[in-house]
Amino acid sequence: MTAVEGQAGTASDQPASTVQPPPLRRNRDFNLLWSGQALSDMGTQMSTIAYPLLILMITGSAAKAGIVGSATIAGTLVFLLPAGVAADRWPRKKILVATSVVQLIVGASVVPAIVTQHVYLVHLAAVGFIQGTALAFYTGASRGALRRIVPLEQLPDAFARTQARDRAAVMLGPPAGSALFGVAPYLPFAADSLSFGAITLAASLLRKSLDPEQQPVPAEQLPLWQRVMTGLRYVFATPYLRMVTVWATVVNGVIAGVRLTSIVLAEHMGAPPAQIGLLFSISAAIGLVGAIFAKRIIAYLGERLLVQLVSWTFPVCAAVMAVTPWVWLIGIMAGLTGFLLMPINVVLMSRAAQLAPDHLQAQMSNAMQLCWTSLMAVSPALFGFITDQIGPRAMILITAGVYLLIAIWTLTRRGMELLERRARAGAPRESDSPA
Image (tube, rainbow, N blue to C red):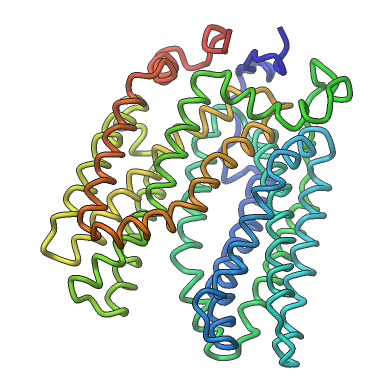
């Protein structure tokens, strides 16, 4: 049975070695990619806050302010699956460089438009869609590249560092982007373009081969639609990957929706805009601590106990948020959710990367991202509609119920057994693969 037909790869895909790999801080290629992506993430967060500010300044329309974000998500969702196929077939380094250059060029086009006062919504929407499309290809190539430049046993540490990097960008990027916008509206877009230059340079300097090993079934022998759907079929044929995908889809979708509902709740409790912004800063800071200490948390609790703890803590945090008389507790509960989300992301995603064969890394990761991003794209509107009907406290109580249901479902899945066996045996076995 081939991997395309459903057999998962294992740690044996890489030759066994008794030589201890050097620590990640001495892994040149990982540090290059990590540093370049850190600057790129920071720039992206700057422009993410700057786009709605720019559109509001020009049109005064809140409805139009989300156009760029929606166009970016649309471009990413449409191309995630074919981008995964491309990243598992074509040179990943070239994809990393080419997509970064594309994002640099189209993002830079916003700067002269602002300077010359020729800003058009169709231009900004096109920039968002093109950058979202490029992001789909970059994401697949970067996930596949990580497996090639980091030894299997160091993947949890690599994912922990990546989580900390992304969380820091989310916390620091929007305030920096807002500050630059206040100085001159074009500055955050110029900074974002420069950040894509950083990741372009970093990717071009990578030395190790990022390309996957020979596929057991040549992709050319499969019809086009089957090639595009390979990642989804593989994910849902593998018990562990199916469990992670369903869990992440529900949890990420709920988090995206409850973020809006928590803002409404804080407003109902009399919190001014500045205080609401501070609540999110507190939440992000607590989540960053979780990302920084993710490796130690995992080592202390173990993988299976961590997943159990997080599964039961999420509904408790939501319930406390729903009944709290103290507005600051909203930020603290959201922060605790983010704190625990960081180490569990490290556990679940690093195991997924270890389990999947090299030639399916990009297709697997893009297929999983397609599932949870799709729900994240619609959940804020859905949560907002329901919140208008029943109020924010009732909506957050419903959220607690959803968390409880997904916890029960996850903890009774066959895929949980993999975490328990891996803790004792240290490597996935063929019996963990789909039949």
